[in-house]
Length: 130
Image 1: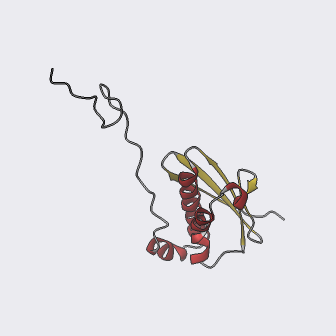
Image 2: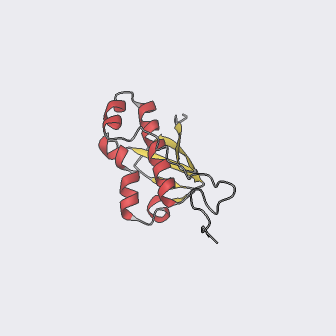
Image 3: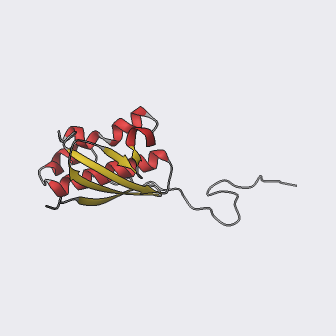
């Protein structure tokens, strides 16, 4: 007997996450580590699992996520989007609930690139009149 798993990708800033779903007891692992151990902030951990709580599937699915790039907040945002997309793939009825709560929208904000002739993206060197 093979267990069907769902794989979806989520992105936030420069972080890219892939979430793998299987039927289970609600165990969450990120990059081979326990999720509570990986995400040290309790508020970030709770925000990561919000799509599961909104759809009332918390504790029924095992989630294995791999995430690369970015910082902790970006990684948590990427995992949250991947979880939401995987839930929609599992059950299309979840789409409207997740959309209303804002979990289906990819956050487009990225770091602005550095421009030539300047020290940073918008900062300028000090002006000297004489």
